[in-house]
Amino acid sequence: MPMDGAMLASVVHELERLLVGGRIDKIIQSEADEIIIAARAGGANHKLLLTANAQAPRIHLTALAKTAPQTAPQFCMVLRKHLSGGRILGIRQPHFERVVEMDIENRTEMGDTARKTLLIEIMGKHSNIILRDASGKVLDAVKHVPPSVSSVRTVLPGAQYQPPPNRGKANPLEAVPTGEASLFEQFNGISPVLSEEICGEAARGAGLPAAFAQFVQRIQTGAFAPQLYFDDTGKAVDITPWPFFLYVQHRAQPYDSPSEMLETFYQRRDTAYRLQQKTTDLRKVITLLLERARKKSFAHEKDLTATHDRDTLRIRGELLTAYLHKVPRGAATFTAENFYDDNAPMDIPLDPALSPADNAQRFFRQYNKQKRAAIALQEQIAQNNADITYLESVLAALQNSHAEEDIAEIRAELADQRFIKRAPKTKQKSRPAKPLHYTSSDGYDLYVGKNNTQNDTLTLRTAGPNDLWFHTKDIPGSHVILLTRNTDPPETTLHEAANLAAYHSRARTSSNVPVDYVARRHVKKPAGAKPGYVIYDYHKTLYVTPVEPKE
Image: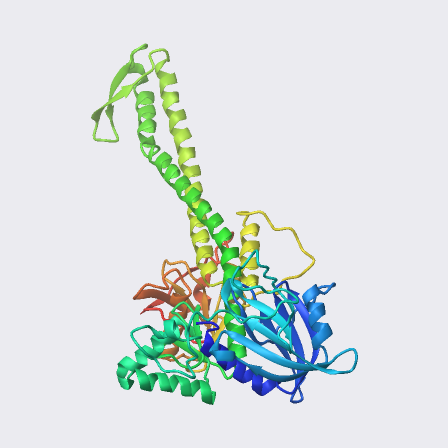
């Protein structure tokens, strides 16, 4: 429910507490539809983000460092002219709408005191940031809306400001529910999710009047406790201004500041979107490579099957050689006693144009050709199977990628293995990705490789000989290292390590997943093996149903 009336109320409550009375130091327009205002209030510096981006319109404090363009856009220049150095008088949310108004007092060029109002309207693709004067005249807006675009409402410099149409909805802080219409249909600022939560509270025994009154009281008293919710995969699914029973099955992370929560939510969402874009192309490439490798394996296996009768060719040659004196020249067939099969008769097809000796040599040549082919095919099949195992492990690694550095490492690894072309070098050096680190409930350090390069580093360099190595049995996934400190870890820690291995594998959504574990000294990497591939013995196996680990 990002930025409905209740979420916006929690932000306004925070902004009133932290910004009112402060002075505006700096204004930048970091994006075409985004403004950042730096202000000093209460002895502290703050940065206020306002964005009218259609996909994520919002207002909140931010800690992000944004770069200003070399030439400030026109709207930014207007804001600087009227607001720079001004004092923030008040911040409000009129009629519980998805609108925030910030009154700012400043001196004009003539030295007179003037009041301006900066508004942000959070309305999806119609979102806007508008500056108006005390008479209500629009001084400028980040998005101009001429009559040719909207016949309902014009937003242009010089025009009189008109609030967004409310479609007959009431202010929930000044009215009570009536009739059969949903709360979403009756009131400003109540989203479908918030409506469902209030009605759910009513159905659980409170009754609608009491549940609605409780909601109103929360808003009026500022009883906010922002929550960020995650699904089983760790994906952020929603945010709420206080704990919602609607999400009781989800893992919740509470925040003291709604601004901090909103920034985290949108950063995670933006990062997830960017990662999805970057991994989608890579996933397609790997999937295509896997399909080709599997088709190649099928073809090689078929060709290898055709060589399985090559010993028959050798036996024919040897029998002809043994019975050369009995083979008539120009014969099309010859029946010999097969001394490899209790002298059972064997019919041998012959080329009448060749001598008996040349026929024997022809069988030997065919035998040797198929023998060489079988050896080559077995090598190709082994190599192809290694490629398939490796590419499947890369797909599993993509599942564990949480940052662009992880994707960059996987791309570099694939380029090293000559599966894709190496990307051109850039001046900007990417930070090396780090393996995931967890601490068990018994205090032991656990490390999880996010790709095959990290798997090799953890297993072959980080782990000591007595540390424990975990991996899903015959399932692509991460190497997990448990640093034992030369002690015998408790069963709880062993199961937590096994859970990490299962969760960070292709079997994440399965149950009763087998996880092998063994002392690191029993894990070996064959010469020339691909990244992440090891062999091991003397292992034990645990069976776990993966659950999302706590960071």
